Amino acid sequence: MTDLTDNLVLRARDFAFAAHNAIDHRRKYTGEPYTTHLQRVAQLVESVDGDESMIAAAYLHDTVEDTTTTIEDIRSAFGDDVAYLVSCLTDVSKPEDGNRKIRKKMDREHIAKGDARVHTIKLADLLDNGWSITSHDPRFAKVFMAEKRELLEVLGDGNPHLFHRARVMVESYMAALGTPDVEVTTLYPSTVPGDPSVPTKTTFTLWEYVGSVYAPQLYEAIKVIGVMPPRHVLNEVLAREPVGPYVMEWTPVEVTDEAYEYFVKQVHWSLDGYCIEDRSLWHHPDYSSWRAALDNKLKDNPKFKPLEFGAQHRVLGIPLGRDNWLSRREIDYNRRAHDVDSILFPLRDFLRALEHCHPACCGLQAYSFEPEWIVEASEKVGRSEAVGLLDRVLIDLENLELDGTEVRSRDLFNTSLHIDELVALLRHVHKEICRSTG
Image (cartoon, rainbow, N blue to C red; front, side, top):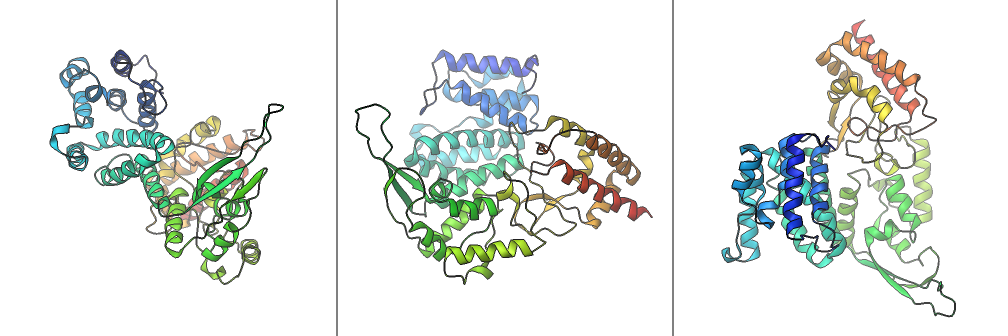
């Protein structure tokens, strides 16, 4: 977080905390102090380089709506700019204005008039509320997500990374509504001597079931390898008894054509597109033959580049050319290699000049390291300067001892390139620039 000796942010945080604590304001589902929500929203805004006014407004975004604070109080304490942001973030509808649909339309039209900073803060607020509601109130979540899908239509100029995360959250949830649930009943031994064991029934969404211990075949295919099995293979696995300890009974599930389409959409959104449908394998009659054919294709096809576990489902399955490396652009909390980040920092402008969308029209942020892209990017920053920066970065990376630690950078790479892969990549870039200069 920003150094809280910063006067504006510190004062806004303390003001908001005092206002919400004065009415003992708590989160609806967890009972935790409402200030935890304000803190998380402010952290999200700061994580995408929000300025001081934005971070202050993130703390204050619910004070006028939920406490006795007025916009004039905000203006007097924090100035016109913060007051503008908070005003745009405050709902204008009243209960007497009509039903929920009418009121939400009024509020949506109000926030649409705000600038990109307002929309960035609202995206952070939407993300934190969405995570809480989908976890604790599935019935209301259906209404909430439908409303937020409409809200996203007016927040498109907010921070692109927060917008993408919010869209993934909404679209993957809406797609899940069209897929069947899977029920599994387990009977775990009682930990209290003499007490009988009690069966426990758990209802999973299809996506949750794929991520559980009960369907390792689907987990490996979809989330590790990144290839979607055809419907008949999916149904074959779902008809099997779940793999796992203490399973008593389960409800076999058959996925219809319509539900399969929904599930494919959910997988696409949940994995940011890093899962492909390879229809050339769909003629195989069962999971075993389909998976054997898939393994052979991955083994024989040099265009597939497997990375280390932890990022495979994000990268493996995307066809990569010899000179085309893919890298994710996503905020990745608590997994940042600080030393590598500081070494790469001088290349920031050069690397960002390599950003593009790949494959075409999918909206994925990636870096292209094909020769023509490298040359064009080096011209933007100056070829001699780019070569000098690369020389320094390569020396620093080669002198860095990471013992195989994955390279992770919140701002630049966010993937699981190991140190030797990163060095090889930068050497390739260096060679292409030098070749272009003769």
